[in-house]
Amino acid sequence: MEIQLERSEMKMKETITIAASALALILSTGVAAESAKTLDKAHEKAESDLTLDPAHAKAEADLKTMDAKGEKKLDAAHEKSEEHLKAMDEKK
Image 1 (tube, one colour):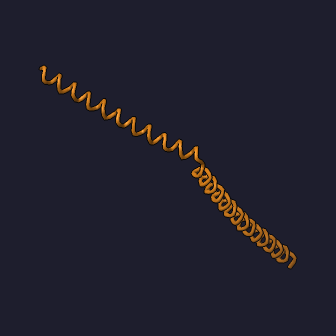
Image 2: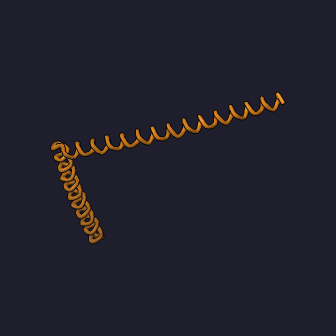
Image 3: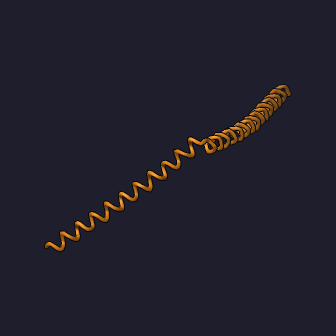
């Protein structure tokens, strides 16, 4: 009888331990989800602040201008090389 009582107490302790672990896991998951939400909101705000910054807008415009100029130069160089190849073919 005493052995059954000890086994019963051990099972009860195991059950309580498992339940406490499960509760801790659930609570930590909730905390992690809240932290993720807070982080997402902070990230969105930072992006919004950056987008509203006039210096950021100017830098983006400058990059687009530089890209456009670079593409024009690349196209011009490509056309020039094609002309040279054509001229070389005609000389042969």
